[in-house]
Image (tube, rainbow, N blue to C red; front, side):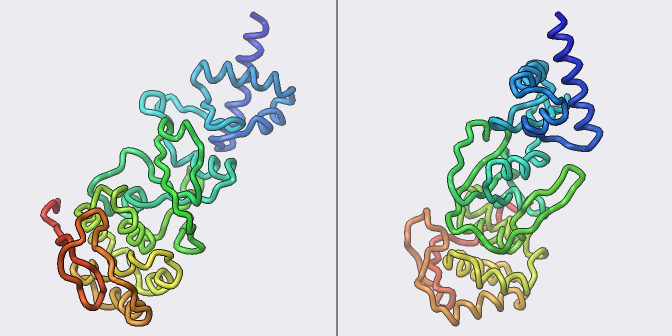
Length: 270
């Protein structure tokens, strides 16, 4: 009984201290320093707190405070994502429909937070935490912006990188029709300087061609189309299908070198 009471008191002190500092994640080593106890004693306290649903083990060695409001639907991924990725020593960014949703441009909100990584991460709790991982081996050196909030920092793809990624990861973005709608709503967020930078560093030329064609078809401002147009004129890339999952049939747009195997369809407009 005394052992249980000590665990309860020590656990309460740990949680109160973390909450007072606005911290929502912590390592076992941090808990040791705060409680001034041996590792095995700290692990026993954390085990007690997990059974009480006061903390959640995100990955071995890293824990998160578990707010009562999160116990029914699961812990919210945004406050813990950056700490989790730093602990796992993995670059990342929130992308695709999750990034588009952040910029106010989504028509099919993803059930899980879409996170892009440079390599596959073995993480059995990813689905439980509402995380959906996608791999991009050519990880960007630009096109990522840090978004700061009361819960901390999260890395997002920029609107321009998001638009290009949506066309590269079409199957993970609810298909081509949805991608068209989302990119149309992203247009007000795009800027000419950022597009100039993206066409220099984006690793997949096919997405640049597709985005150029799509912006033209969506009647975007010609100034936005210009950086992609200049890139095509300079590089003269090989022809690519507008959507790679459909049969490669149809005419080829002679300028953008895009095989038009799908129509730009906005009939699902809200």
